[in-house]
Image 1 (tube, rainbow over the protein chains, first blue to last red):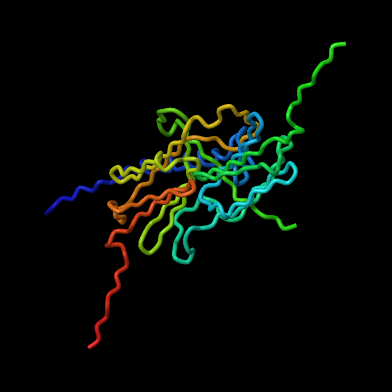
Image 2 (tube, each protein chain N blue to C red; image 1 turned 60 degrees about the horizontal axis):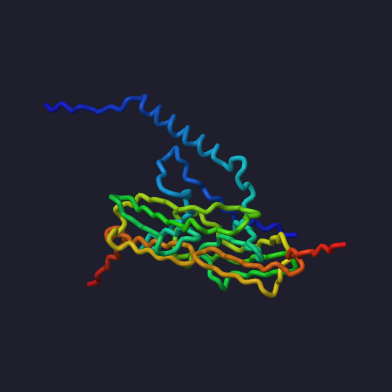
Length: 149
Length: 134
């Protein structure tokens, strides 16, 4: 007769497993945007900066074709519109994980300074849109000459 | 007026309590999609601002490790007025099963999105058996 040794798991092992799962769940629930970060982050996220005579607006829009992007400047409002499309036919695939947002988006930003709408340039490289907006001549600082009396 | 929902993006910082981060700069988890087609598994990863030559895709035992590094000197001579995102390196890893033909993994980079094509191994693909008629 053979004796078979049963490797019976300790019932407390499953308890530690539950404990770990619960602490993971609590970690997940408490990891929702902490204070001080961007709570209402719209797509695409932007960075606005100034350098000398230009206002620079950057936006992270990965995975989009340049033809699907539309950038407009009206007075001091910059509008970025576009659509992010799925790359292949939806009918032929099954999603296993989905984190990236798809669809149309539009954002309008009030610029910090008056800009020269005729001279605005935009470039798109590696998924980052950079819009360079030269400041309008009237918003540039003017040297005031003080007359000696 | 019709209420439209915008897709929202939130960058998740790799916290130092889960792992040890060495080297310069901050690291982030890029967002990724995984989908399955009859012949392949496809992983799409958003890595805005990364040049193709700064991406490394490594296969280590059964983990596919993807690192994307961005240049550190971006905002010289600029005054930032408003900022909604942080720039940093990207890291993500995936555990790959035996159902993937590991020697034929392909990677493509276009417009800041990395596409990884993982062909399925022959034994998991459906094989059609012909029925003979006399």
